[in-house]
Length: 285
Length: 285
Image: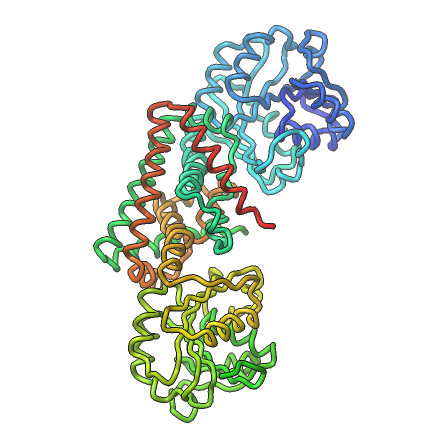
């Protein structure tokens, strides 16, 4: 398959990410179609010119015209979709996804998929604290990273097509990781941080604290506003890694607590100097 | 004492906060003097017109001309200063401070202070991840909260003067708490959040993760860049409260961890819904 301006791209699932993909690719001149659950979603996307066509019915006629299919669905629904409708996909098509965990999705999909099409996993590390097609905004990709997660079953061509898709979407960087490395990294950088934010926000009723709240608390709890259906599914699909990362954090937090309990000011300051030194890598360039 | 445009204000300690106080009050038309440890600091503040006069020598002649004295020093140095130089302060003067913990400072200072002057504690909840007079910037007060922490020993007049100072500095809100309530609140909102950020940053070497880091991790670790001398002192001076807040957080974090371990998806989603609901209070208006 060639990926060029004549390639027709289908987005399955028009939430915030699916809608933003549609917008970015339509604006680049591609023919973008969509399948959504609700008619209102399709109507909205058509009226805002996010897509060229759309439907709520999954039919062979509609699906078979597309060269690239992006699944922007929750992981379990995504796998069910493949089981149910993969026959409609035309030979040679490239499939990809946007799922936030990889081991539990990529290998399953590749195992059940017919041999005439190829699935290559990807994770667009972008989002907002709002959901739904109405909040679609391709600008969320501008400063974000797009990670392609091939397995040994993927061809070099599919990897290149998937990377090109990341660039066409407008991501700042496009990188590549194994599904295993991806899940370890995401367990630490994203899932653990969400666990921390949720736990912190759950500590107290807090309403009376609003007046006293500076930026620190606001920054640490921004992501405590969380889509519980989606994130609980992602957490469970990465259970082993996330537990490991949570335990690592608990251990460090207990270490710091003990320096306070024991008034071990040298150790406490050393921990602060390490964090100060390491945080410098993350200053945005 | 009356606090009006003729009041002369002395800032003791010209770091980021002292320098920003000086800038804000000078710009409002007050006569602002300063005492700093290093001659370069005084010279810098004079050259940038942050202050009208300044010195590195603590003398009766200099100190005795001021009506309001703001101590922008580390807690221990502040108490030592009072013990050593309080005789120089003129009768009727109002003293205040900027210290981030209150119980351990306010009562000690009030106990040792001569009866002809009055000390009233205050905490400007503002800051930056940089330090020193060169980074002075009165705009850090614009969206911030100024907390006055009177005790039973304070007069209504002093409380009013201290609140007026908060308004003159340009704080968005000026509020009032007992030293006890203040330390509980700051233990949770500020000190605990710094402990979390430091622990998270200390978990891994992390340099190789920079490319994959989205806003969540950056937001949660922004305050991991920390002045270890100042914060370790503040932590120890609020040890009992901070330990309580750290233990509360550990308990909630362990609860969330257990929902994952036990795949108790209902409880996990419930914790996420609570955090989502509560975080809404903190959306900036």
